[in-house]
Length: 518
Image (cartoon, rainbow, N blue to C red; front, side):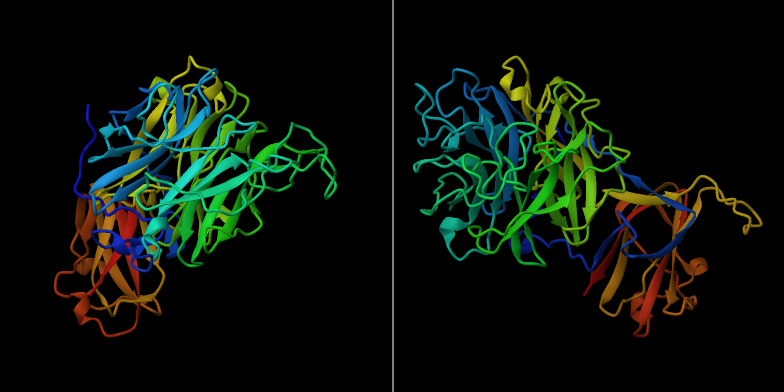
């Protein structure tokens, strides 16, 4: 089977939407209903997580080459100039394989479903001269290193348009130290490390229940408290104008000893070379099962939100299995977990290669009517790369455009203040805003089983003549861009001022409101 192929993507460029071939998502114009950020209040409604859909062709990238005993960590970019997808994925060659055992591989695609692995004259592997390997690490004491790639069209230096952050070990000097390394590329294929001392951020390395060190304790240089660990997911924070590295961070246990569980840390940089001290931003709490922690937590920015595709690691099963929870933040620091009782994407129902661990990234691809989330996967637990009998691969799942979560009426509203119970009836009143430059309002909504009526209230909460519920044109059917209309009036007839949209739902679901400007 093949996945649905769409037109050229609007691609979510992590640094800037400006170079995309069409409009990007404006956080002031597209109002997602993933939380109540844009809602004044609502009655008789509940929020729900929209289901995701696997590509039936998964895995779209499988283990086919000698150095691909296990593949997982990924980053994806759609190049609007060359009209192609690019993917970078980490591959592990297995015990006894030529050094280095971990490499970064490269593949391309026209549709994001069928991928080709070019044979390049960059890095041989054993007796194979031409490979799709584009980066190798120095090696060291770890078999795995997470790498994150982003495309940066703003950089005036064309040799630095592609940026990679990855985990590696230093060479030379008296001691080899692990931590953050970076590289740059003009095309995503030919990479150069800057000629500066690395790692740029040290990483803790040691054994479970190591004692917490003293500062500068001899022989314990690797014992670095509150340091970002061996995986790096990079995105660009447009408001703060910073590159952000979001990665797992070890936190200490109940007795104060090291390497208990993974939390999530955040570090920032303006130039991709000088990084701030990591800040712990998210940890498991008493509402999580005892064996649960966060493996890594890739973040991307979209429509004014920071979304996290957190890998929820359950060490109690099969060596540590992982499913994906959707977390939400308005600033990238303070995080909410409104969907912690239901996975955004789960191993359940997947093929064998993805029944153990799912590895998300910070680079979703936004199409006209769909958002794709590429991921790597193991058939075993998170440390399953060491088992050469397991399966692995890369796939993607998707949601309809902007349908992360939505609002729908509750089955029954029968509060004492209601003279007559209401069934599957609810309303959402949006916060006041000016509609002066808005020429139309569109709803991302499913009204297949019912209908939606929209009215306008003024800033004081009064109905506006000509724009009441009774004068609204009924919205029916399932669509990403339903146009809101009234029988005799248009938005051009409104005097200037602040207005509230009140959206009446009758057996219908609402996911987003789009304010289309002139």
